[in-house]
Image 1 (cartoon, helix red, strand yellow):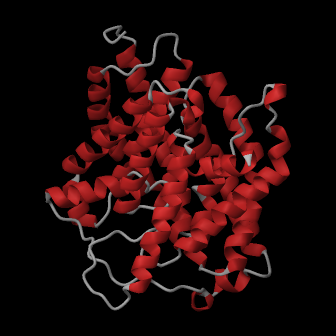
Image 2: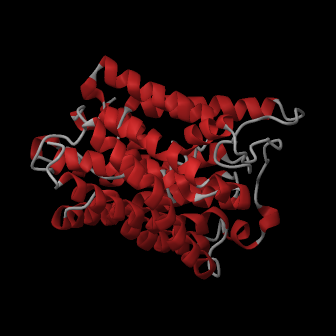
Length: 367
């Protein structure tokens, strides 16, 4: 039972929350949304962001994540030994990065998502452990290293191995062979309205995990807050202090970023505002767990950091991603290319805002 809860909790670990209830509700609510879109295939003008994008591959995305987590725990789970002082192993990347990109890009076929999960489950953990060690040495949030080393470097290795597996080569080579059943066309075009800002903010909360639906985001936030209220030690590794600042700071930073950059959405249809959620939550958690002072959760500090992140993180992330997309696009396509480009971009944006937040905290005005 402990292994099962460990696998489930990892689904929301890329925000640093590690919440079983939040993960279960996120997965379950996305299944409900997926079923709703499937059962209303003839309905037009549904105002909703489809889970995992319009391609209809949510179940394959989820399958690839579970396959990766289960295989990673079977192969590397012996490392998780609290009695020996190893109470945490970083395997969460396999349910929020490369396997999902492969499943969304190459189709809803069991060979695709199972192969993607298996390859990443075996290969990526040693890179994650190295990332943990490096983050401790240079004192930055682990996801900064994970996105650049684990997702980008090991991701390239995993994708290249995937592409030469004979049983999936036809899906890689021939787009017509890919199994896909797109959702009905949904009405989620960007608009400069309060309603759109709320919907996009909620969707952004789960965008980095490849869910990206407003109802899923709302359900996940409620579940995490409820878990914290019922038992503060039930999430964030029993470090309940920064949880309110993390969740509400993330919402604050993202909603402000959407307000600031809504013209980018109108021009492009999408902009990298979702990076603000992790850019707010992870440095806050890292500072609370590793800083020499009390958890930096004062309201003025949270507000100032949210403003900083809202302005800076999307520009840093977008600038780096724009530079990488045409270069990586020569080798990779679809969501795979998006992962390869956005992962290090998010890592760099988190690093920039972490340094800024640390500088603000070092002034001594907040504790």
